Image (cartoon, rainbow, N blue to C red; front, side, top):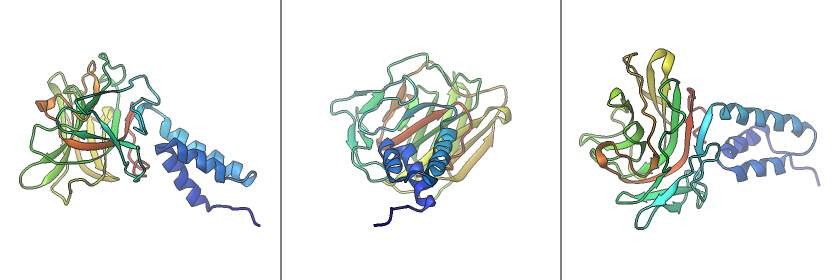
Length: 258
């Protein structure tokens, strides 16, 4: 019986998924025959290694809420608490849902050490849930950084924000499009410090790009990371969250969509 040799593009897809899910990466290794496959394996690890550069926090939320590259492990709070559910790849126990009442994760640590306002950054996550009028926050770090699913009466929009002690406000919001409730969206905010530019991506689409006052650098450190809740506006909303990443550099979401 001939050896099974998956097409290299399929291998690449497995690797991309492996960055989302460690089990898939192990499966990729199992599918690789020995010789020529060493070269493919080297390419695969190079891709994953490149995507790891500058990755300072990573919560895949695959069965727990531990930070896989940093030390900001998340603790569950609430009467019921966050509930494990299907992730954006429809795999069980790969994401957490939050009830919008008193269900959230919290890092419980002040003095968050990385996004100090002196570097570029990227915040990315997969989210789906209910859009609601402000206040309503699906994740954040104090008033300093987060995402919202906004119901602005005329349309549903997705917003990313960052502030620095009430100054340096970054507020990027998608245009009115056909966004829907309870549909997965990959949301990414990048802050390009040298050019004072904030870009908001939905999937791989750049939906809002703005240049801000160079004397007002966004991001306030010193607040816990929260999922399912944020202090901005004091509101939470019904949401499911998967694959949360924080980088200390600008990372366009080329591979985040897998």
